[in-house]
Image 1 (cartoon, rainbow, N blue to C red):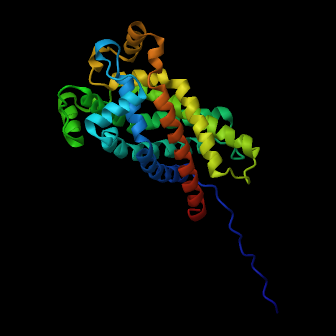
Image 2 (image 1 turned 90 degrees about the vertical axis):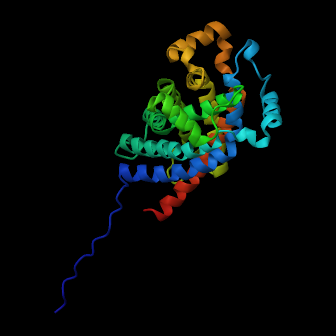
Length: 306
């Protein structure tokens, strides 16, 4: 007598949880952040120097080339990497927080078919930017600006990373590394909202929202550069205010709004676009490289990390 066959259950694919997607984003983002900042830092240095430059007797540079020339002449080529250690240590958690938060929030906002509307994509990016602002960007940017600003003074007071951070903590406490937090939250929120929205909208346009179609990595880089440029023109005024609020001279401003008003009155509206050109170069390269690296790492993860 034949024994009845018992059907073997077929495993059903289970969608990754929001937490798992977030963890993938954190690890991939951390790797991406370290690689990206080592490539693009000199343009960030020049941008910050130009944004700290004021009119009149305090003006030190006549433009990008002059800033590079004077920095190299005074401190050598590696003078353009002043403050890199701060940004390198900060870029890993910054990028990890950004991409981890984006993967987490975007997975929470997807509909039953796994699709993400343009509006929800925009807000996913905004929440990712706000998360990275609080977790990593504000402390990192404050310390970086302090170090660059210190180099501009006649008698620099910071001997190195740990000495400088120790001095800031001793004189100002934890609040010393959170200068300009409101402006940074607004800046990073708008930054990532614009970047993720533009990048993924361009990818959707290329693929026709066909999930089986992939975008070539070179094209991902082009889309990233476009997204980066859009974010620069969209929020450079916020970036200028943030930089001034994090400088050693920030005490002359009551808050971010007072800083913006004084810049407008004393230097005119175009002061809000100081450093746009070097920032544009850095950000376009930064975002292009970042998304290319991140896309490649996530492709690998999706193959080996089911």
